[in-house]
Length: 282
Image 1: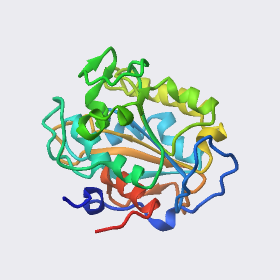
Image 2: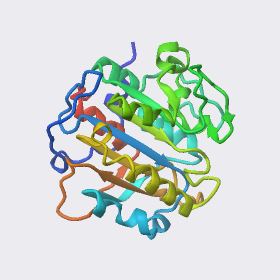
Image 3: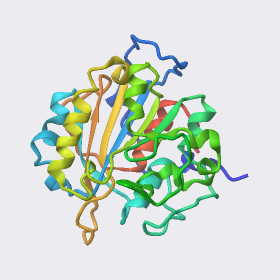
Image 4: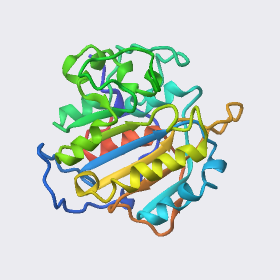
C-alpha cells in the first residue's frame, strides 16, 4: 500500500508561532474534533489575478487589517492552468492532471482521507452546482466548473455516494450556518462570475465583501475558524513567478505586522491542516 501522500508533500507549513487556540463558545450539531490551533478552516479560492493587481484593490488590501489577519506577500501558485492548483491544494501533488480536462485520479489519497481518519467533518461548497443531492461529474453546469472543484477529480470521492454527497451547492452554506451545522473543513468555490475568472477583479472584490462581511460575524461560521482566502493562479501566464495574493483571517492569527514575506505556496494550506490535526509527518 502506498504511503499517505499528504504526509510527504513539499512546501512550507504556516508558522506554528503565528496561531494559537481560542476556546469555542458555541457547539455544533456535529461533534467538534478540537484542533491544535483552530477548530475550523474555511478555504475560499478566487481565480486568475496577479498579486500586484489584487493588493491594490481597496477591499483586498485592507482585509487583513479589518479582520485580525495577515497578508502573505510571497505566496505562489503551483502551475498553469487552473485545475492542477486546486488538486494540489487538497492532495499535495499535481500529478495526473492534464490541463483543464476532467481528471480521474485513482493512485493517491486526498485531504478527505486525512479528515475522515480523524473523524473531522467536511464539505465542498460549489456555487452553481445543482442542489438536487446527486453526484454531478459534468465539466460545466451553468457557471459551475468541475476544474475548480478538485474533490470531483478523485475517484475515491466521485465514486462514493457518501463522499460525493458532501459536494454541495454554495447556497447550502447559509442553511448550515442557520442550523449550526457548518463542517470543520469548508472549501468554497465561487462561480465563474463571482471568482473573477469571467468578469474582473472588481467583481470578485465586491462578491467577497458581500459574502464574507455578512457571515463572518456569525459564531456558527467564524468561532475559532481560520479563513484562507487565495487565488488559484496569477493572470499573467508567461510569468515564472505565479505570485498570488493570500490572506489569513481569524482570532488565532498572531502578528507583529500586517504582512508576512515568508515563501508559501498552495501546498501550505494542506500542510497547515495536517499539522493542526497532528497527522504524522513522514
